[in-house]
Image (cartoon, rainbow, N blue to C red; front, top):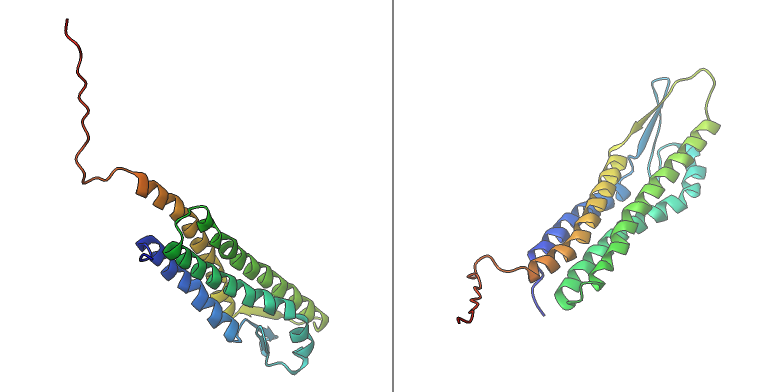
Length: 189
């Protein structure tokens, strides 16, 4: 067993950012705030809202809840697998395995965000009152999950480049070793 390389540890630290932001975004409830004619129309989150009539919306977004949680979990699993593979396995091709999780996680988060917006807009359109102004404000939770998604993709790209860089670095001649000089002798007549 060897110590994880510095590149993998840097990637693991980078991977902690989307995991932490994703957990914070899923746990908090300020995803979108609605104001109707400058009056509070409710704050909608992933698991709850402060509007009494929104129980149908919360029941309809169970798919979104699963996608968001699965996306954050996939990034976490990808980072854990990448570190463990670096510690225990030398085969560079198997080091591409975490990429499945690292790319799937942010993709699931994006799909969840799009479905959340769809369901929320459908819900609000059924309750729209003519001649009113409805303002939607993004809450900090939806901003956190969006940033987690972007950094999750950066983490996936980082871990995709680490095996190739390590393979090149391991086979490159070291800068500190003296150059090898081959002398060729020729026959003299």
